[in-house]
Each structure stands twice: as structure tokens, then as C-alpha cells.
Amino acid sequence: MSEQQPVFNIERIYLKDLSLEIPNAPQVYVERESPKIDVNLHNEARALDAGLYEVVLTATVTAKLKDKTAFLVEVAQAGIFQIRNVPQQELDAVLGITCGNILFPYLRESISNTVVRGGFPPFWLNHLNFDALYQQQRQQQQVGTPPATS
Image (tube, rainbow, N blue to C red; front, side):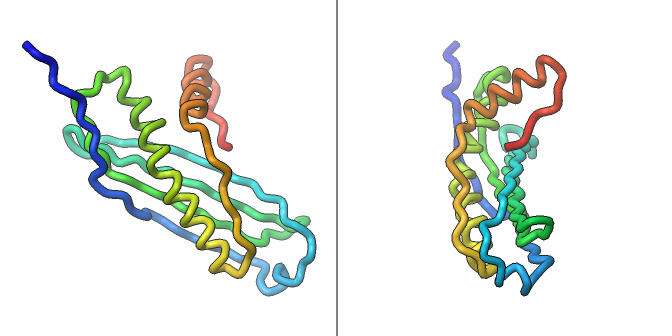
């Protein structure tokens, strides 16, 4: 009997959620100092049907000027992926690494566009190494600590 070849297809990429808050407008627009930026990232996957998975990559970007929030952007970039004939022990890596790498450029662009449309200078997320993030999460799961966000 021959083994079936692995199948990986992108079925759909979509923006699942997007929000922008500028709670201290218009005062934040007259500030001259650079804001402190905090980025939190979360990756989640779930099975939809046999061989179909939804992966959601969510980023929350908060910019603060002293004790005031300049802006808060949250983007949930999602994709539906067909993944078949992949061994179970490799499926988590495909969902966490491969799908994350595919979704990240869309997430990054959505954040940048939203920040600019909010009246702020462009902001670009630095590239992420999803392989390293996946390995870090696996190590933390093995020792029983909650995963860190970047």
C-alpha cells in the first residue's frame, strides 16, 4: 500500500476582527515625544471539518505617551487551510509555523494601515520567527508554564 501525499492548501484568508481606539484624541496628536509601544501576539488553531482548520493570528498593539494611551489596535487575521495526510505529531507545527508565516504579512499590513488611518505615523511589526515561537511554546507547555506573548 502506498502512502498518500500530504496536502496543504490555502482555502481563504480573511480579516476576522479589527478595532482601533484613540481614547485621548485630540490631545495625543499634539504630543511631541515618541510613544512606548507594546505588542502582544496570540496564535490559535481549531479544526472546522475533516482536514479543514481555521488559524487566527491576533495582535494587540498599544502605544502610550506617559500614562495616556495614544492608540490601541487589535487585529485578528485568519485563514482556513486544508491540511490532509500530515502525521498528527507534525500537524501542530504546520498550524503554528507554516500558517503563522502565511498570515503574518496580512496582519502586519492591516495594523500599519489602521495606525496610519488613525492619524499616526506608520508603524510596522518586526518580522517574527514562528519556528522559534513554536519551539518556545512547546518548551513552556512541557514545564507547565503559560506561554509568553511577544
